[in-house]
Each structure stands twice: as C-alpha cells, then as structure tokens.
Image (cartoon, rainbow, N blue to C red; front, side, top):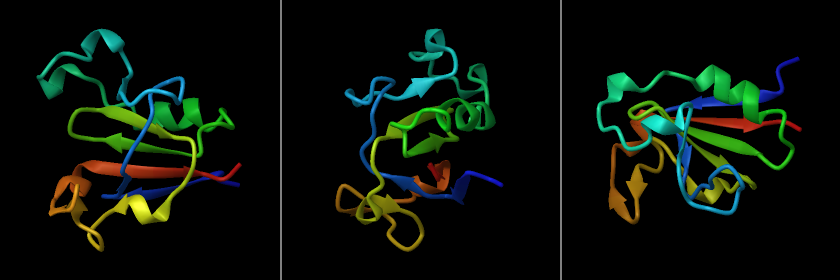
Length: 107
C-alpha cells in the first residue's frame, strides 16, 4: 500500500529545513546549494520521498522541480496550498505552483 499522495503542480507555502526549525530549502547535495545552474543539480524527488516518508515529524514535502530543492512540512495546512485553483504567492497572481510537486505522507 502506498503511504503517500502526490499532487503535481502544487505546493504548500512555508516550509522548514532538515531540523524542521529553519526556513531553508534542502538539496540532495548541499554543496550545490549556491549553484544557479539547474543542470548541475540532480533530480531527486523519488529519493526525497523515500528519505522523508520514514520521518514521522515530516508530514509533507514540497519539491521544486525548477531548482531541485525540497521544503519539509511538519503539519499539513490546506489553506496554504498553491495550485491552479489558488494560483497566488504572497497575495499576488503566480505560476510558481507549476514548478512544484506536493507529497503528503500518510503516517
């Protein structure tokens, strides 16, 4: 049985770093964090799902396919979801959701 749900072109505003206390994105290879060239970063959505579904503190992740980064979410808040039905960011129209994949864990 699959223990997560994937919502393409969706994300949850607000996220945390590894310790769920910060507000920084996580990269597969932290040495590539400052690199601006997307092709230098690896696509690691599947690895991120397998890594964070094992952590009960992580309720969801938002994967940014544009820069291959992940934000962790310690709680699920549907009022902060952004997708084609709520295409805003910080109160302004946005297509930012198109670069994201929201993964919600069922644990």
